[in-house]
Length: 175
Image 1 (cartoon, one colour):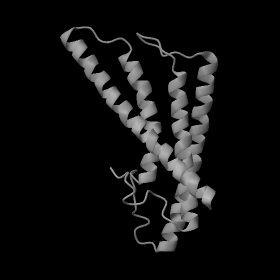
Image 2 (cartoon, helix red, strand yellow):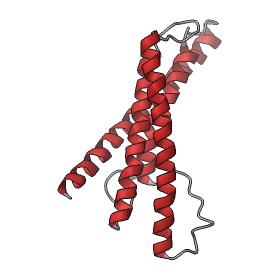
Image 3 (cartoon, helix red, strand yellow):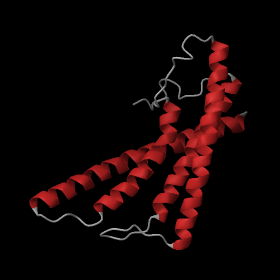
């Protein structure tokens, strides 16, 4: 159990670092967008490659933030079917839904990884005013997808053990 506890803590820390990176990148994308708008409207000259780079960064932001959002329970929850269930049935339905979501996320991670590997192999570059390699962006997105997959697995294991799957209240990571 000590090993699982350490892995649990390590995953939460890496997930939180991914969240911090995604948050920082979101700020960068906002500043890039503002700079491009100002440049376009005041200097009548857009900054080349901003739209393409912003798009690549947005994919990275989404995938890096997924694991922490899942860990915090920040995703949208529709509880119409589960609100009147007893504790055992709620736990069972949570395990089933997390398993389905985890499998879907693993498939997304697998395909994202395949895309990243292919992108490295063909030296893929973004098409637009400014060419830049997209393989690093796809690789980080794939890492984020695998991190989210691991978070689903962590939550399933915690529920099977009889503990809550999401982050504990007061763990210092509440928004």
